Image 1 (cartoon, rainbow, N blue to C red):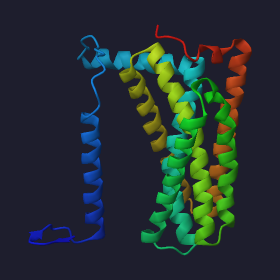
Image 2 (cartoon, rainbow, N blue to C red; image 1 turned 120 degrees about the horizontal axis):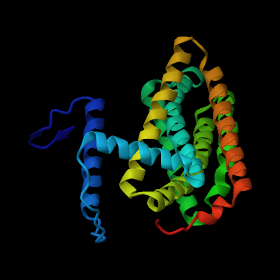
Image 3 (spheres, rainbow, N blue to C red; image 1 turned 60 degrees about the vertical axis):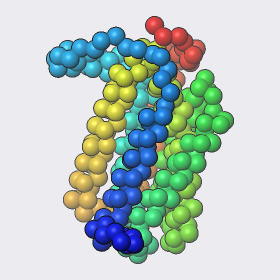
Length: 262
């Protein structure tokens, strides 16, 4: 990066990318500082590590046992694990199927992210919290759509498919995230809910990336991995839907949406 009379020390694309990312974080931090004070105050929290661990384990168990919490937590956990893995799959897929170098393949990751953003905005406009569970079949459809990547042979086809897949991902994960935050607020504090969510999501990211690394080590082709990946997403989403239907047969858990904090 060359600036008049200033030696930035930024001489490579990687360094420039890090500078841009850092600036984005600074801007995001500034936005956080501008969030108005809601007046909400928590009572003094424990600082003993064992006490905190016990409270976290209890919160994690509570959210997984809740009929709505377990569905939304399962979906968001699956989404972040699958999303992180797909980022790496896309790079290898672009290299093998499209002949794109890493610098160009990274553009496909951005296209996928744009799709997620678009789907998320659309979901925010058209899906009410009470209707959030109706988007679950979109997750199945997304899993079934992923294997079409193996048939793509041009960059424009790749752009189009990733936009669609990303849009579907954003469309079904935003209502699930909203539902999870709602149940977390009802059952516990927002901080505990976010901690449980982040723990499970990052744990699944590590798990799915570990499985992907194992498949790479076994020298499986990227197209076979994509087929397995799409099938896994679809099957897991079907399992989540069946679990939700089983919960509904016990009692109408959807009626709990909108419930006030305990």
